[in-house]
Image 1 (cartoon, rainbow, N blue to C red):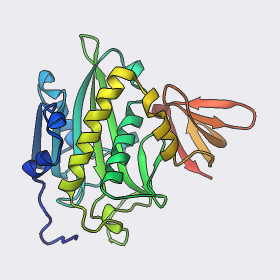
Image 2 (spheres, rainbow, N blue to C red):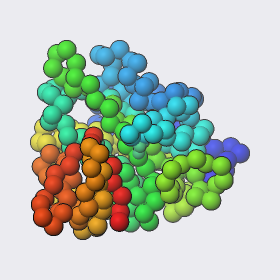
Image 3 (cartoon, protein in one colour):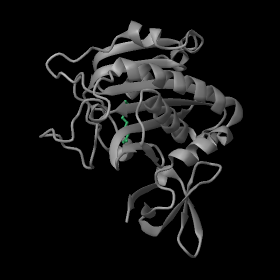
Image 4 (cartoon, rainbow, N blue to C red):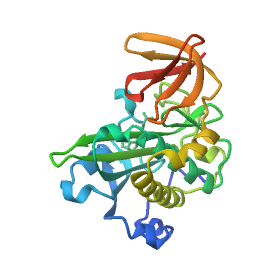
Length: 269
Ligand code: BTN
């Protein structure tokens, strides 16, 4: 149960003991920081050779980053802030679906922790009752050897009640404790890492095709009327799933547009 006076601390051993040893054996490192600027930045500061499969969690982020230049509210001891480094052979062009794989992994981990009814808002927000529960920030860089270095950062609101005053977040949010009051951050971190490692291995060898059925089940936009803002233009239409590259399909009535996540923001209308 949430107890702001003495939040349960993140515990490396509890997390590692909750992960299948075959999967935890694939991690290069797992560290827990008390306070960092951003767990994504902390991974990016590691020597390049140490970044692949390195995991950093933090009790607090002082400048947690969200997508599209937003900040990510990251108070001490309340929520989960986790980043994982992964190096892919090949160019960034093949990794358009990576943010979707991260969202699917997070959604699966939440289901395993006992949550149901959550949905993904393309490309990788996880919503519960239409309110934001988790966000994922995937940052990628091409290195001089032609490999793509990705850092996947996941923020899950665990203990941040909707009713809490004084929080400046520009959209409705919710937290895991609203549904699962006894779910601890350590308990959710273990399945999250399992799902990420397992799914990134599959994505590396087989691409996005194996994930399409799960995406269809969790696609919270499918069939909804939305407005998409792209390159100073807006398009209204019905969300029609994704294409093979992970782009959002928008049926405007006169054409089927395919929109890439770096370029757009959207809202339901
Ligand atoms: C979003 O929805 O805008 C993405 C939010 C991503 C937040 C996580 S918390 C862990 C990692 N470190 C960061 O600075 N950001 C991501």
